[in-house]
Length: 446
Image (cartoon, rainbow, N blue to C red; front, side):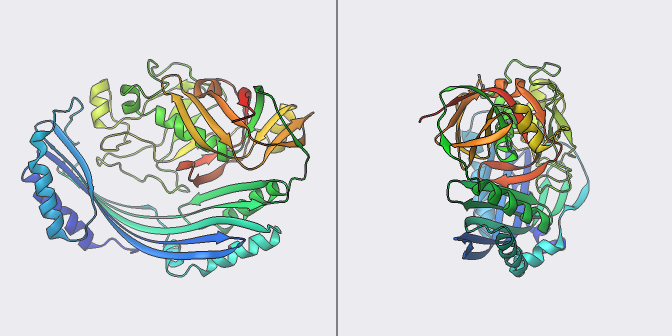
């Protein structure tokens, strides 16, 4: 790890040659990774794990029939036999209305834009992570804390019958921390291509700050209220919103953007949502997608206006447009998400709201109606009631029950600072500000 290796490429080319014997189109993606995970409980390390993964993913098409699968083997002879068996069963499948040939791109690309050698060093010796997390917990008097730190380094090879060969080196350091105070709890997350101690420090500071809020409890009625969403919550919402922008989701009727076209207004003018595969600070993406198409940063929603859906070659053909470089062999998807910042300070957003809630974290987001974008989500950790622009109380057992179109239309202001977030509820690495949203439907019991 740390250099492009010939052996991984040779393995991928060997499997592609086997597939090419029986297929019209094929692609092979091999990924080898080394990881270390540190789990925290009661503010101390409870578990430290190291492991290596080897993943084999294949795409094969014959007579307009498509198959995508993954194999859990490192033995080439076994992989060869399983690939052959899968290919021979292709004729049992129905023809796909989405079939399109893999792009012709006879290039040999090496991509290390998302790699830091120092992360591999952390995988091999994570003591600097331990020293930093213990130091930050002590400086913030964090008390009871639980969470996770992950460092990962990976090498990947993509080969296609369109002539593309892509080799990549990638790294990631991310974590989340939940701190338990006397009256409430706080949580924060961070992510990055390289390890930046300041991001870990911010994670501890934010989680600790919210956990130490010493306010009386109050209850709220089911109603519409203004809400400041932290990047933890906005990131969860942005994941769902970006998912709705996948052209395949639209075609399947699982998107509130069904019937919308580029140029239509779908959000407030303060809101811009980007897919950012080239963002150097975020670990998702790179210079090419799963079809070997060159990626580019792009606005999906710009100042409230829908600019594009996310396409691979298949959905692009179906829609009569060009791929956006967002393959997914089946489902086009974002690689990284960025919500453009505004010009407000975080405390200014709370003062501007005057009366409402600060929701610091959430989980169990569920869609009840995909076409309407109707969803509910449970608030987690500190929920702060604000009166006259000042925190006055904490709220227990609160749920947001609204629609994503309404959330987007009701965005009023965004903070000037963005935070890199990734954890269970924000699966796509994201760069996010705080957001003030007006008139959000909340319920007080569930």
